Image (cartoon, rainbow, N blue to C red; front, side):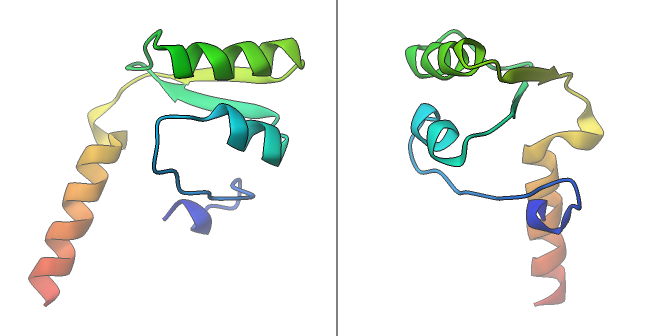
Length: 83
């Protein structure tokens, strides 16, 4: 779904809560976080890298219509209804 958006250049799956290496490898300009983004060590590392390198961290507000969990649940329900 993300890849289909015109504003998205690259979609890279992740399997661990570690974002700094991906941000470095992709040389991201903007890293978007949700309201639930905490101050865990992996989050502080990526924020430090981005800010130190003049990159931007943008936080988006939670809204039930844009909840990734709700979008996934709805998509799975639609797929199950078709199957």
